[in-house]
Image (cartoon, rainbow, N blue to C red; front, side):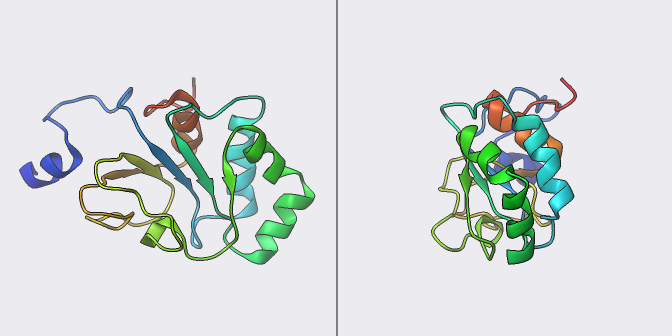
Length: 146
């Protein structure tokens, strides 16, 4: 427990809500269904990603990408200030120029988390679903219900 808290830069009992973040990675090949992208777009529509946050949105397949674009979801992500990327390996395994640098906090919707998974060792990340989109707007870990 001490090692995990140390890696994440947290203290026992510390609240996560409001913890500053640097990057949000939305989706991966295992978590990028069209329904997931619709949910994220519904939270981002009409809002902007915080100036201190980089949002990467990666559809799970070429088919999902085409369907999302046909619905205009790509425009919602871009209008919010996010990056609409090609389907394929991405930040979930720190590939294609998308690793989280050491010292940056990430919120990710990918399905795995261990030291260095999102990028450089020392780049801690949290797993989330709708919290990811809400956090991108807030610039810190946020409750999507609000």
